[in-house]
Length: 163
Image (tube, rainbow, N blue to C red; front, top):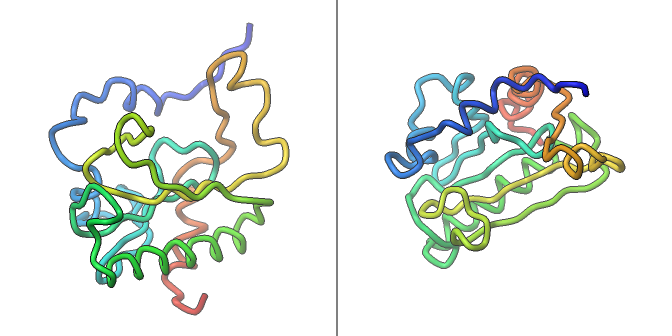
């Protein structure tokens, strides 16, 4: 049997802070964007990388305001949320050339939301063959690039502002 070394997963498994502080509220006020994987902050929404990604380049776009569902957003917040989602798609296409995307919002715990009270959009780049036997046989996803390397590829693109 072969072992897959993924020590960063233990932090997720052992997390005891799920109900203490909102992930998105704390990350949007980060003083260390690289450490917190924040790529861009707008007037009403921001973009960050998922610390526990499904695939390389898995991003999340969240409103700055702590709201549980899309219908709770003001029109200006919804417009910026969608504009940043579109911007993220363009940058991910440029940097990683994915063959497709899963873009979605999970509203409520039964719908799969890990953070229930702060709505957010997931953007998951996809490539032909990226789902292989690992999740089926070992309940394991293989992420082929270090998060910091992915961050360093994406960050300059979000700083440009000309996408």
